Image (cartoon, rainbow, N blue to C red; front, side, top):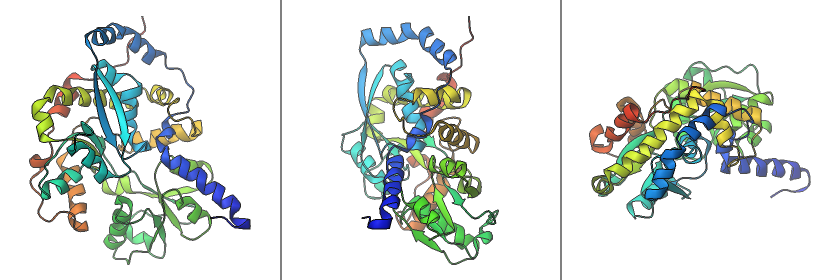
Length: 360
């Protein structure tokens, strides 16, 4: 709690926490023309009407919470891509990756959007699962600093610097710790609560803060600099996936296909019409500065955090599983094909694409 001179810091912390809770709002505030997307919607109005007449299927998708890196999920909902597939999607936020998977296996949700490796953890406990789509394909963390002299191009360059990360056993902490080790260094990490990393950085308690978007772009526009990117360091990494139970996929494969198709179209829109993607999410998350939103989405697309398709690559999966093994969550992981079913994503890549319409 704040005392006297700490009042300003407390207000700042609350603002950052609010930004974290609705961090997906980074995509929200750009007020730009979206004529081509609106034209696409008009051209498909007849399809939607037929599906409404025939009955829309209501489903629930569980998620960790409203976070920026889940942008493809929100675009699929708000742009009408799920509706085009005949789906009415409701979201429930669980507050944890493991809780998200628990919602799926309990039947409270048809699908889950969270760390996909939890299906492997669950498998080791006797409850199998499947990853059927790729939502986040990289490590969405950047080392932000206020010291213009800090430049980290390899792990060894961290020598002498302290880094603030989310608390262990978070992915951020685990990967940052590994980066120190890879450089032959003793990890110098300050575990910091969600929403307070930038506060620690400004207070000079650490040299670097390992942050997510939109906080990264907000900091850069405020005078900070990016010292390094974990996305660039680790490359493809299965951070967030669309998951389901084997039983549900066997009983209703067409439902899974519709969901993955909606995700694929949203991935296309984010790349082909980023301005439209930002405008579509404006009403959902209105609190992020427009310039911050624009820069953040651009960074996610350029560094391939938002993937081009929903297919989970084995190289990306292997890196994520290796992290779980190192953390002690899994001892003897099964082969890739025991956890990942790419058939839905492969079909979506072929048959479910969004193409900007040509003006009449």
